[in-house]
Structures are given as C-alpha cells and as structure tokens.
Image (cartoon, rainbow, N blue to C red):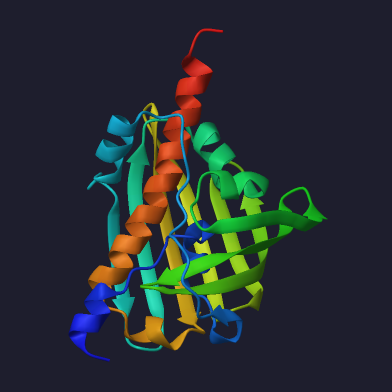
Length: 217
C-alpha cells in the first residue's frame, strides 16, 4: 500500500481505551457510511478548543505485528469523578463516537465482563467490531482489561489514576496484536492522532460532568 493512500486513511475513535480501534476482517462491512459524531452540552467553541488539546501525550510503537500505546494527561477533576467516567461502561456510546452498544454482561463488585459493539471507518469503508472483555477494578486507582473474545488476537490494557492536587493524572498503557491487517502497517502519526482523539472525548466528558455537578441547582 502506497504512503499517499495511507495518509488518506482515517479511523473513527471508537474503542473504550483503544481496544475498539482494532477491528477484525471477519466482521468487515465494505459500505459507505457517514462518520458518526456525538453531541455534547459543552459549547461548540469549547469543543473546538478541547479537541486541539496538545496536553494529551501519546506514544506509539508499531513493529507491524504488535502495537504498544502509552497515553498520559491531566484532567481538572478529582480521581472519583474521573473514575466515574472511565467505568461508566453502560453509557460509553453517549460520549465515545462510534460505539453503538456497551453492556455489562456478567460479574459482581470489581470484576466484570463487558460486551461492546460499534463501527470503525477507513476512508469510505466501514468495519463493524465486537468484543467481550474481562475488567478488574481497583477503585479509584487502577483499571485492568483483557480481551476474552472479539476482533483482535490480543488486547491488554491498564489505566492508572493518580491525584495531583485538585486534578487527576490519567496514565494508560495498551499491548495490542490487531486482527485487522491494515493497522499493522499504520503509521505512528496515524495511530497517535486516533488515540488522542479518543482520550479527548473521555476528558471532555469528565469536564462536562464536573461542570454539571458544580452548577447551581
């Protein structure tokens, strides 16, 4: 595949913590479909500013077989408020674009199984994805995820929350072996941009909820 074509490829940020970015060929739907966008109560001006947030640091290693992702950023909310968004599995479709359904299917307490379905877009082609993941929670400090079945050969993720004064630092790491061949050859810049967009949506939701809680009733 030529470099010019690779530059034209764009993927909707769809996975809760990157996993949804890596769809598989078995569920591909070669169809034209408009890119899905989510609305928010945050003003359009604030959205435009937040989408350009360069304070979300993303590092990617991709050797053609395995993708390692590291993300860190600070959000101006406390750990419990950040945690409430990161673990709001049932409502993920409301604030991460491309996720169609997200359901807790089993588990109790801090050990859960979550099923998710959605779409990923490459240029004019749209691919469906699904996943079932095992999630272990350590409130309000760590979230560990492991794919049990779905469109990837391997996906393991860890998210850590660290208090910094009145703010919270989010640290995310993923170890992914994609099932979709094209992502094995996607450039570092390409994956970094998609990861940053996804975490920007998560950060925006944390800020939105904080403003709702702070507003007079």
